Each structure stands twice: as C-alpha cells, then as structure tokens.
Length: 504
Image (cartoon, rainbow, N blue to C red):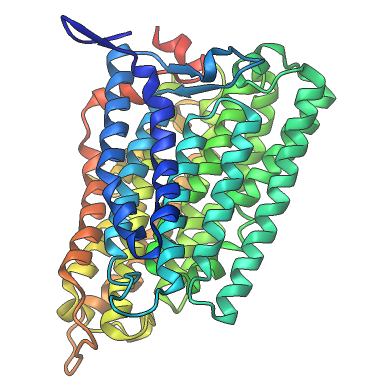
C-alpha cells in the first residue's frame, strides 16, 4: 500500500494492469466508433498514458522496490504476475512519450479526409499505433513467459503492417521479409518456453530462476528463445529485414520500429539472461552475444557510411547502435564492483537511443518532404531551407556518436568505464571505434547540409508542428546526459540479483 495523504491509501500495484489496459481499451473503442474517430481516439488517450506511466515510475521510486501485481489474486504458478522495476518503468515512460510524438507528427500524413469516403490507411495506422503501445507495455511489465509470448506476437502483427501502409510492391516484399524473420523468431521462442515448462513446471520468471539448472534442457530452451528474440531485434547477422523495412515505411512508422519495437525483444533477452538464467550459464552465453554486438557495431557503422539515402543510413545506424546493448551484457553478469555502472549504462543507452532515433527518422521525413527525396549527395545547402530538421538530425547524431552532454555520451562512458575496470579491453576498443564511425556517417549528412548553395528551393515547407516534435525528441536525447545521479539509482531499483547484492 502506498500512502498518498494522511487519510487515503491507494494500491499502486493496480497501476500495472491499468497501463496495459488503457491502449487496449482505446483500440477496442476505435473499432467501435469507426474510422473517422480513430485518430481522435488514439490521440485522446495519450495524455492519460503519460500520466499513468509517470505515476507508476513515481510509485517505484517511492517504494524503492519492484512492484508486483498478481492478476485475479492467483499467485504463480497458477496465476500470472506483472512486475515493474526501475528499467521497465523508464521504458514505459519512454514509450508513452514517443508514441504521442509520432502520432501528432502523423496527423497530416494519416488524416481521414472530411466529406469523402473513408480511407483505409488512416484507420490502419491509428489502430496499429495503439496495438504497438499496448504490446510494448505488456512486454515491459510481463513476468510470465507465455504471456510475454502473447505480447511479443501482438507487437509483431502490429509492427509488420506499418512497413507497407502505402501498398507498393517494394514495401510489401520488405514487410513479408520482416514477417518471415518475426514468425521464425516467435516459433523458436515458443519452443524454448515449452521446453522450460516441461522441464521445470513453471513459466513465471521468478519461479523458474529458482528451479532452473545448467543442464541440457535449459541450454536448448534458452538458446532457442534467444535466437528467436535476436531475429526480432535485428542483431547482426539477423538484421537483413530491418533496412528494407525502413526504406519504404512512413517516417512515423520507422521512428516507432527503430526507437521502440526492437527494444521490446531486447528487453526479453535481458529478462532471460539476467533475471532467469543461472549465473554460470549467463556468464558463457553473454560473451557470444557481446561478440555479435561488437560485429553489429562495426559492420552496421561501415554499411551506414556507404549508404546513398538518408533513411537507409539511419536504418543501418540502428543495426550498429543495437550492438551496444548486447556489448553491455558481459559487464552486467555476476557480482563485481563495475556492474552497477554497466547496468545504468545499458539502460541509458536503450532510452537515449530511442529518443535520438525517433528524432532522426522524423527529421528524415521532413527533409524528404522539403527536397522531394532523401539522396545524401544532393543535400548541399539543405541547412538553409530546412534548418530545424537538420538541427534535430544533428542533435540525435550527437547522442549516437557519444559526445557530451548527450545521453549517449553518459551511457557509452559508463559502459566504457565498466569494460576497462573489468579488464575487457576488446569491448572498450569496439566502443571507441563505433563512436568514430558514427561521427563519420553523421558528418556525411551534416557537412553538405551546412555547405552554401545557390538556387536550392524547398518543394514544400515542413510543418512547424512536426519540426517541433522532431526537435523535442532530439533535445530529450541530449538532456538525458544531464540527468542527476538519482536517475541512475532509480534505474537500479529491482535490478537482477547480482546488482541488488551490490547496492544493499
């Protein structure tokens, strides 16, 4: 129980199901009211979603522990539990902020025209936006492997259609490739969850962490689940679906996919190896995941440097930046003094990347709108006709490069410090190389944009509202680097057992 005043108490644990049910209820209401009211329904609930996410974060902070809600009053293994710790609370707030930002950005792109027959694309976009939001909330609060599978599937079937809203052949092919990877990943995840249930008789992560042993059944199950999640996260070399998906997707869809959707499956990788797996299993597995993350940083950055289109450059930079999340895993397993810094660095990298990448994809849409294309070779003088969009892209790139005072700088500095303190110099060198390569591909865009040019005129002046939204996300990505030390303390609330032991 959580005291709000001397005379009233509220069970704040009830916020957990409420934050999942809000977008679900809005989705059902949108279907009930019809296509012309879908947009208003989706945007109307966003302030309530932000309020619930912030209230939950405040409750976690004040209680200084993970909050748990048991659905229906039946405790696991018979019942299902929801759990909110510091990291999941921050991801919920991040989602609650980025979803409305992309929604208000999409107002002009997916508006139901008045006094004309209803268009299909607006109705589909707004309902899928709500479905993605509901699924992500379910992933970040889930504590049961099967219910996490349900949330993961909802996320997949909401995200895939966003890629091909225009119905062109190229986007349909990209969406089908994405769907193929996602379905194979789902099958592998479900196979692993079934094996764990057959071997240990539970699906609750807390119960499984007490029963699981480093034996063949556990290895096979966790390997299958992890492989499936890596396909959904687009970790190299399973990234082949991501760049084509971004190439033709609308800017708000690309922002959601890159900023949020890939974080959902990565979040489950964290749950598997830091919350569920025995330490001796995790210590071996995370080294392989880190090696894949290092390859993602280097290969993704090099491929980003070679792209001729802005959206593809940003897409390959997503492949690279995801690598940092996996590179942090070997620093966050076991009871060592540097693990608190590694955990905070990992969490801050996930959040700052979400805001930075959302800003960069939205600004890419503004640039394409102004020029009629996104060919980098023809960007000379862009800064004169679309300065705010270039600024938003540059601020997002500042965080990707890891330059102060951005959130990306703080995240990468913490991870670099943890790698050096732990003697894992190889990962430290990869982080430095990744920062230099990121500077290279961001410079490829900024340099010609700031160069003088005569005669360049915009095809269409970007909307001030949409420009402000892209700038707002970029500014948040930068301001995260100025967060007080208490923010790191908050992120460590309810952290895996190794971190909790160090913090007590």
